[in-house]
Length: 376
Ligand SMILES: Cc1cc2nc3c(=O)[nH]c(=O)nc-3n(C[C@H](O)[C@H](O)[C@H](O)COP(=O)(O)OP(=O)(O)OC[C@H]3O[C@@H](n4cnc5c(N)ncnc54)[C@H](O)[C@@H]3O)c2cc1C
Image 1 (cartoon, rainbow, N blue to C red):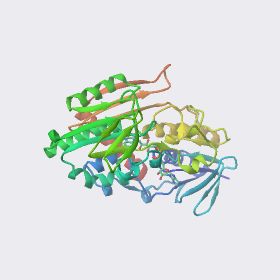
Image 2: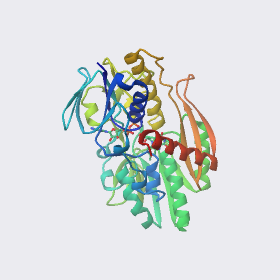
Image 3: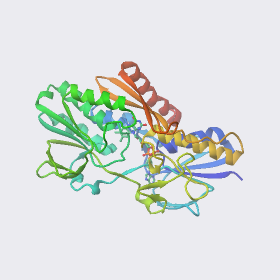
Image 4: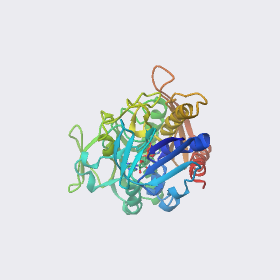
């Protein structure tokens, strides 16, 4: 009998895991991957959508193109997870398995920040898409890029948003009539890399972007167009670009696998306390950033462990906790930070200055995944 592997969530983590299992296990496993959506969108494509660099159609990757031998994709919504029984109930039926991998990502908790529901956020596909029509109408006043809580996905993304907004307004010829402020609940833009943070803060300075670290948006009064920070300070705005507080999807919270908001795992093996149940990516509490490259690295580690268990082949690798993030500095220039959380006594980040060659690398990062996962 082949082993039944059930992967919950077809994002960065679930797609990479299922692809490796298809390549390496063949008929030795029946892999089922479940997602409620009909398409995947790479995280950074949201910035392209909102600033008009790409259309939603161009960046949507329909799951009908995710075709891998030995892998079955089911478009269903997960309603409950019983990790002890390795049983998952969806809106369509019940799925039992031998190995369960939870890769359901992070949800946005708009209700955690009073008033946020009535303003713009750019972290969801729908929010980024709506901004595409809203941004061209902004030509004067105060823009506020506001983060409502940490941890949040892709730590550099709010900084990229502020820098790309500067470019957008400059191109439109209205930058002089606008102010840009960014509120971040971290001490610096990319805490593991002081060099990256220094470069971003210098870029803010050159572009007259006000950076407010160690603060978060606690409330938004859209009637008065005022955002209230956690220390009570009020910031008036004309354009609000929010990053909602993140949380584990409710179905994962209800499964009893979370502590302090996220699924408790062994950070190096991604095992939960339940035998043959793993969690990878944004949902797992590993101490590493919530980013696609880290979800993929975790998927690689879990794949090696499953292949070892199912086929008795190869070595189980530990999760590296390392990954490279590209950072849009504006003007088409892209920087990179290589972050490593587990090799040394404390996390490190190596900064690569923005240039046009890294733009080519970032484009390749996207096209390699489109081809590998979706055959596009
Ligand atoms: C603006 C922005 C820019 C970013 N830039 C980068 C970047 O440059 N580099 C980078 O590495 N990362 C980037 N990220 C972060 C990256 O997108 C996420 O960290 C990554 O997608 C996490 O992967 P994951 O597999 O854990 O979860 P996800 O990719 O979020 O996948 C989770 C899946 O679970 C599904 N799901 C959830 N609940 C259910 C349910 N109940 N039933 C069925 N299906 C369900 C969802 O539909 C989703 O497809 C960015 C994010 C944003 C918002």
